Amino acid sequence: MLLEAAVVHDLPADAVLFGQGDRPEFLHVLIDGRVGLTARGMDEKEVVVEFMEPGEAFILAAVLTDAPYLMAARTLPPSRVLLIPAKALREHVSTNAKLAAGMLASLSRHYRMLVRQIKDLKLHSATERLGCYLLVLAAQAATKPDGTVTVTLPVEKALLATRLGTTPENLSRAFANLRPSGVRTLGGTVTISDLQKLTEACAMAPPIPD
Amino acid sequence: MLLEAAVVHDLPADAVLFGQGDRPEFLHVLIDGRVGLTARGMDEKEVVVEFMEPGEAFILAAVLTDAPYLMAARTLPPSRVLLIPAKALREHVSTNAKLAAGMLASLSRHYRMLVRQIKDLKLHSATERLGCYLLVLAAQAATKPDGTVTVTLPVEKALLATRLGTTPENLSRAFANLRPSGVRTLGGTVTISDLQKLTEACAMAPPIPD
Picture (tube, each protein chain N blue to C red):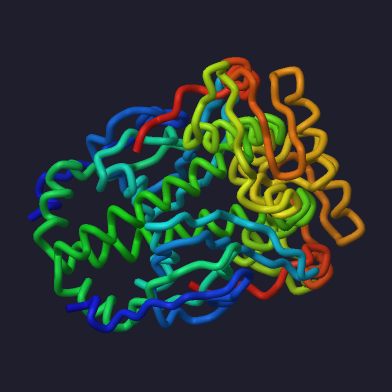
């Protein structure tokens, strides 16, 4: 069994799971917490490409092809991660069509996440991207009887700005732009008073499902 | 044999292969020509997410999971495309570990293409992105004895701007910014007089291989 060789690691906040350019030794599956997949340029500026939530395996493409990671991974809050040896996984996948099908489905889902992000970066303003991001958070939160939803930003604003493909200054401007649509912030807490108004402000087409 | 059910289509320039939101009926493999994978927002603005070159299969993620396409595909010059029925492909993949492994490798490569593009969009300026794009074109062209390389832009500048995640105005500015690094344009023809200087202008780290 593949999972017999797997181990569970408990990690503190801000722990590096692997670096950009490292060769994959394990497939990481997030059990609990949150992980940022990050990238660095020549000037050592770090940007978040994507956040991983519990249940996600990352980064399958590098693990399956034994290619160096294009991104680094680090925990944001303290997190629990399952480590599956990469070599054993590749051997199982090459002989087990059912496992391969599962990996194809997972990789396809992650491919589509990246397509959605590129579409957002190319088609939408930073304000629209922030509005959509808040709507996704709001969909996972409870709505009060008066229609208000309060969400907590999962990471500090500087990091969130890089995930949304903008600068901290432009993110502040984007929050200000959303004020007429009923969005108020206090530190990392965001209150949305009118989901319908915010949806209109995002200028989003209905999402194409997975 | 899976390929027995496949057919070859010859298409004129600007022919739509499938639309955003369509359900995949075939896996498309480009034999000859060039295809743009494009996306549209609410305002019907069209952007190029990626260009496909001969030998590329697109878009595997949607075909394998039978999910609606997130992007449209259309030919740029006249192109020849192989169509493999999606349903037959999915059936073969689910029972044939070797075929599944090939699909995983292809999907992994495309996943990494998107990661590279997101990194470029988040870490680099439009000028740096244009410089890198020209270096990729230059790597496929012949260098003259005086070190000069002449390349032809594969698409009109307005479309190229969307691929690079910028506007036509900013693309003109980016070309102007690269002039001191020895880049001259005349319509769709670009002359690069000093590859070393252009490489430095791109502020790129050495690429992580596949």
